[in-house]
Image (cartoon, rainbow, N blue to C red; front, side, top):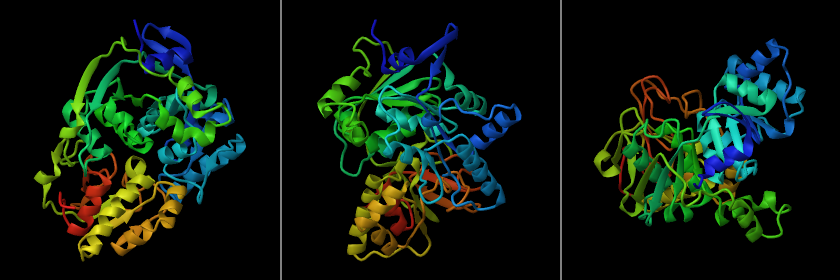
Length: 429
């Protein structure tokens, strides 16, 4: 019987199997940020275990509240900073070189096909776009991972998400994943891995695949995953070129990390993406999704473009193109809307500057912030007041997610950009 890509990765990393359905895996990467890791650091220190299994495999960043907004967040940053220095963690990204973790670590080439990756962050599933098994974990698992380089998971069960057809104009990867979540529900992939496959996925860029995998957890999945191919190799080539004679050789080597034709799945879903429309969420769950046409006219107070879901250069290009066309047609920044854009990494920021995108955003009335996760989880750089509404490119619309009493409508960068000038949700751009 054939195996899924997740089963193959588990087999290759299996250290122990203490129970029938429990696998202890060797880890290729342990990622850390200043919100969840300091708790683990302090607990390990109290136990006299202030060491790491391999400093070259640990990557750390201050990204959720950066720069610090108060003494508490400054202390969190200090704990991570001092720990990284004590343990000689070379890849530590502090103020000035830091960015949103899942965007930054991806563009640094830290994840390769077949890797196992964990982090104390639910959207660690983003790295599955590279053909890796990547999952968010709790504090205890993070402590063991930092100390011993292993983590325990249940045997993988995989749900196959077949995506075929061609996306219509104005429909993006964000719309695709929202359609999927609305169909299977927020618990539809609980304790499973969502494997994205099909012609539509093959035609997607790495950044689009990251958007798909990033929101797999919003359907309850442990991880999302895509098959590595020529697109994966092209993205990673600057980091792997010394390991292979050619890109073709790399594609062949990585092809071992693909699911077999006779692999068994828990469930199989097939979607024709050519039927998908631009959508956004309503209410307070990510599976509550409507076409933009049905949400037309919904008033907003804020627009936010950024995050580990949609803050990459391709996202900024899409949003800026919508704004540029509208500005050329004589539209002005809406007086009742605060618009914020946060490039996900310094490299994205610099590229956006060089392409003139930042000028477009500023002409459209946007506040351009440094790379940060702050607004996404209601901690800084764009927190909502009670009763306010935000059109956002982030990944969660839970009640109070971006601020107590605030409402978040999730949508693509194009839809968010259009809303910023219209002052409401609109399907017209």
